[in-house]
Amino acid sequence: MSRKALSLTIALAVVPALALTACGSGDGGQVGADAKQTLTVWGMGEEGARLQKVAEEFTKENPNITVKVTPVGWDVVHQKMVSAAAGGKLPDMAQMGSTMMGEFIALDALEPVDEKVFDKNDFFPATWDGNVQDGTAYGVPWYADARGLYYRTDLAEKAGIDKAPTTWQEHRALAEAYQKNGAKWGTELQPGSTGAWQSWLPFLYSEGGELVDKDGRSALGSAEAVKAFDMWGGYFKDGLARKNFVVGHDPVKSFGSGEAPTFMSGPWMVQNITDQQPQLEGKWKAAALPAGSKGSVSWVGGSSLVTFKDSEHKAAAEKFTAFLTTPETQAEWYTMAKSLPASKAAWDQPQLKEGGESLMVFKQSLDTAKEVPPLEKWSEIAALIEGTLEKIAQGADPAAEAKKLQGSTEGLMAK
Image 1 (cartoon, rainbow, N blue to C red):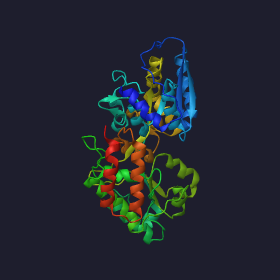
Image 2: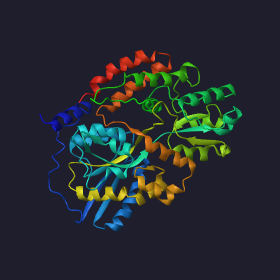
Image 3: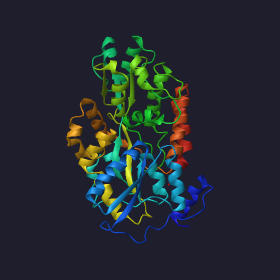
Image 4: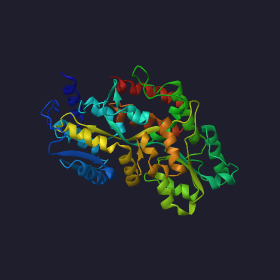
């Protein structure tokens, strides 16, 4: 059985109601970039709704190419894409979330990137590397997410601290100082449930740990992983962070009230705090994530642009991808969506240069960030990490839980 047929069989085990139809070889007749044509694109969430406007600017420059953007909700995109791949109904190209790349590379549904057209050195390393498997790139970075630390400067000063924490030890000391001076919690950390891995990964990466070792095997039982679990779990063990996950909990409200005066999150929180907590003007800052023994290291998320193998409009897709990733378009996209440009040169555009101190914090994070590798079974691996974190938040031994996690993820990471 070919790799493609095998991959599709696996996908159909997840979606049993689908009929078994091949993705297609992608070797059919191709339409040249200069021909009159319609390019179909799927965009996700709010980005999908905004992308049509940008596409219209592209069509002004390329009147022969009509771009039809279909917005797809993030909550349904995975199922919709898997079903479309199995049914041979994928669009020409799509926005793809960073942690989805591995699955669709395994499905053999993505067209490799022409690295003569797209230079990896134009992008922040982690945004490019998250799309690479076995030396081949399957997506072009579009926008990036990285994490920073938000903290209440006014409450820190009352507690005798006048600068941002630069290490995890200093962050812990800040959390303790906040709590001693009346905060209910020293910091916000998600103790479990979907997405909890995002609060733990900076601990792992800043200690030099990896999700996968150099041989492609699980590294979740390594000494670095155990240390990261122990550091993360210490906040719960000592009562500095709440142990129970609350659905719908808004850290901005706790930040505003002073209940939890520091948390880690992405760049969108700058605007959220400004809009929702105007009384905090001048009383908070964003800073780089605290450093472990290997420095300050965020993980990078975001989205890339992929072209599907079945597309008959690959030349037009490549042209639209190139348009979306120019520094000028990336900077305009930032003004529209507040998404961080993956293009390094975009940060020299006026829109980014005028973004202020907080924005530069996230550029610093992108400079040192690491990718989540393109793992076919990432959703299952993430769920197991989250289950481990939930147990550790409740007091389980980090070393014992890391050993169990190593065993349960080994088969999921094997190629």
